[in-house]
Amino acid sequence: AEDALRQAQKMEAVGQLTGGIAHDFNNLLTGIVGSLDLMQTRLSQGRMDNIERYAKAAMSSANRAAALTHRLLAFARRQPLDPKSVDANLLIASLEDLLRRTIGETIALDIAMGEGLWPTLCDPHQLENAILNLAINARDAMPDGGRLRIETVNTELDRAYARLHPGVEPGQYICISVSDTGTGMPADVIARAFDPFFTTKPLGQGTGLGLSMIYGFARQSDGHAKIDSQVGHGTAVKLYLPRSVDGEAEAGAVEAGAEVSRL
Ligand code: ADP
Image 1 (cartoon, protein in one colour):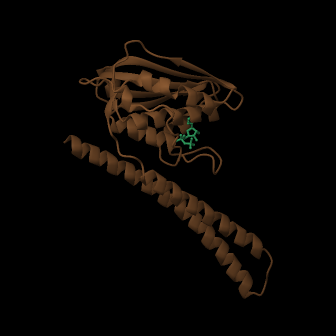
Image 2 (tube, rainbow, N blue to C red; image 1 turned 30 degrees about the horizontal axis):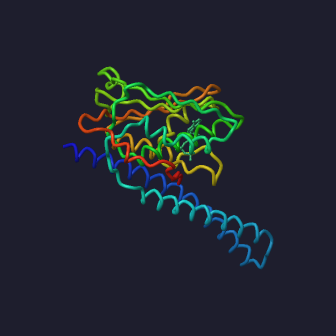
Image 3 (cartoon, helix red, strand yellow; image 1 turned 120 degrees about the vertical axis):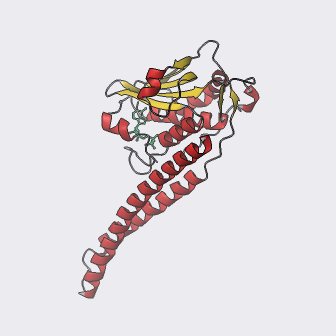
């Protein structure tokens, strides 16, 4: 039953993803066909006005479509999950230098490690990627500087919380919160932020895949991801990952200086 549920969730994510891509791709094709149609009409009338403009528009849509398929391929190449018992505090400590370099000097980094943090069961490489992606989002939300805070804490999610968040099992989790003092997100952005390919960033700067991959990672790890944000004040993304019951945290599984795999 567990497997069936997981499979269903995977299919739902794939469906959402392909639906989103098909939609965007279709818009781009419509643009290309429209431009070509205008060019054809002009040429059949022996006119050359605006031909170059239409050719440029078609070319730009075609380039966007190529970029879209590129991102889809990168998304499909995602590494499979390889869960281990992980000490998130150690993992975050090993990322500290890279985080500092990523956010630059105008943003202060504040790491608050929960004491006696439970080990958690998840894929350490995906957790690294998740934290780095969240840091990049936080940086992008603080163009004029600010504070990035990463906090870990043991957390019990109770039945009331589980009822409010379908798919979440009550129990013991660690919470990794990545928060910033940036622009914040309006409600309509929060509502779509976990959707694949949803981005408010200019073309070429955002893929809209960061948060959707983080959400997928949390769910596949039997955890949960959530956004708390206030426009003008900042954003906190919270990752809840289940406490691992047996085995010790394998700090060795965590390599320092991991690569940022930002799609
Ligand atoms: P991308 O960063 O490529 O746009 P994401 O899936 O990571 O894709 O984020 C989707 C959108 O959510 C962003 O375009 C942005 O509008 C919003 N967002 C994400 N993180 C933050 C943050 N820390 N502060 C403000 N907005 C954010």
